[in-house]
Length: 349
Image (cartoon, rainbow, N blue to C red; front, top):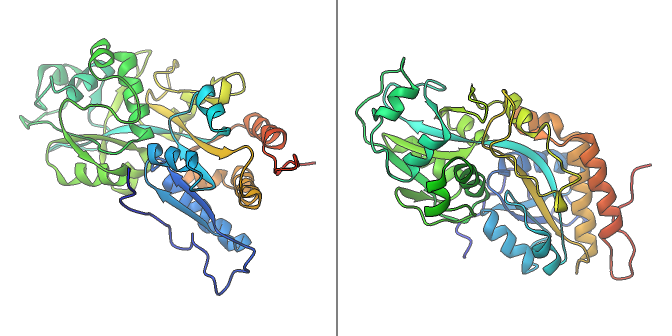
């Protein structure tokens, strides 16, 4: 798939006139889910070190393709790769953050958090079976809300997307019809709706289209001032998307016991848990053709673990627990090496 656009935050690409020749930009591509925080981190990192991060927010699927083709130093994906896929391309995978995917709506008279949805009803909307905002199923979930007789306009991602993987994985867990008719991956055959590229494209389409419903990473909902729905979680509690509910979903994740750290956080138990949570992962070659570039990338990610937590929380991302960070650092030191077998990362003393 061709890259249709390139998003680079102000200050992310280092200016040649002010940066020494040895301080090459770090090249990455993939997840739009993670773009807001990677952009913010990159700007701060450049100010501190003079090294830029050139990150293309092209979607998880295209990011995976680029790292497999060795076109970038790292890729970001919100769908964890299997151990077999990692081994095939000699890739290492590690989580950077967790966050939430939220249903966003543009419905007459509906304010943020007014609307409550549950998983089966959300699946029926995206299957095209519920067509109006005053459908009986929606009225039952929202007895105190005046719902208009407005047609529902579904908005979905048109590109290969980790956000789509998280969203469809959740729908597959709560709806047998969704599992059998659509399934879960980064790009599915949608039965209804209009497509938009990237989280930013989906947010923009929902903002423009009256009666729309879509799904985006929460930072995009906030940045675009979109109305969002509360969701009934696995234990039947209606919860709002907040950093606290995303943290609750991730609280009991078995990161270190899961091969490749490939934890999927949808439909987690717990009264406070947001049901459509997910992690964003980094993919990097274990024996890179350009060891200096990979070493520079590891320094950036190590800096982000150490100093980026507050910036992440300001955008409602959940930083990784210290134990997971330590496990990731040990993996870097043990498995990412140059051609002579020398590790490209030294464990902190």
